[in-house]
Length: 321
Image 1 (cartoon, rainbow, N blue to C red):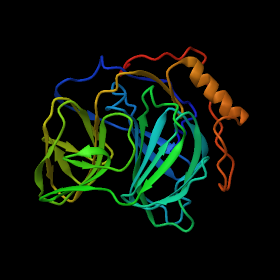
Image 2: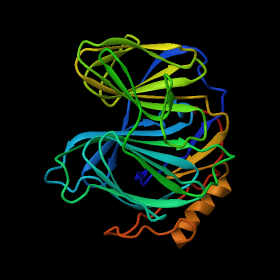
Image 3: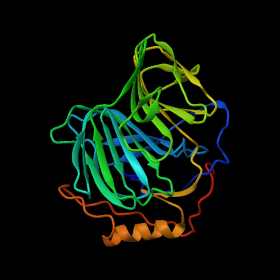
Image 4: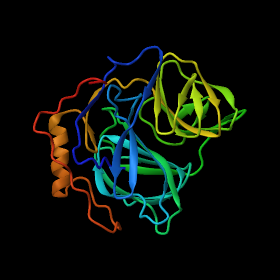
């Protein structure tokens, strides 16, 4: 998914200087962003004061939207570099195309994982015809310097491992949770999991104390470590936890995101993750001139134009403003 904000702001993130090294309960409110004609997303990362959770650097939550008489998701071809995109659905379908030739329909609780590496372009759209409701999350994972120039590629995994407890089914999207490991390729120690809770469930989820964590609320009513989380909000949890108390007041859906605090300082602008001002400006120029990012074939429409880069120099700094 693209950042379609035409006033794309510079985001400086990474570095361990602002990692909360102990358990906290920091509730993050979303910023609402229009994505195309009929989809509004709630942007949780980057957030004012909280830029990353492990290598997770971008989180959008959307829906559930009734798109029966709407085009649904329509994101034209656009570029990425230096990151992985994770497509995760609870309802609906998304058709993915990219410049490596991938063409894949992603369905609920299937992993669509695109590694941009040095450069890729892709589009995302609701199929025609499509299901009535669309509900999901789009996430980015920053690639470390040692792997950020890998060849671009796309993975689709329809079957993912699960961890179960009374009233809980946890689907492991990326990384490892309680001994279950996703087949999705990762480049830093991290975890992403979809948590389905039944009404009345009370359980403790095992965690890695070296990771920092956050929980995105997708649906229903749940308390995370005693804090009520409403759909479209995110609770940042810090580090140093060995388990996470969960309690569901109704059937509820959550996403657990975590990882070792990302050590490198980054520059993130529009759809690019880099390290320097020059890298970002060159990437924008390469997209504008039609080089490096390849071509998305089969999309019915024009590709997305890049916004203007800010006149001031883009500098990598820490995890918060």
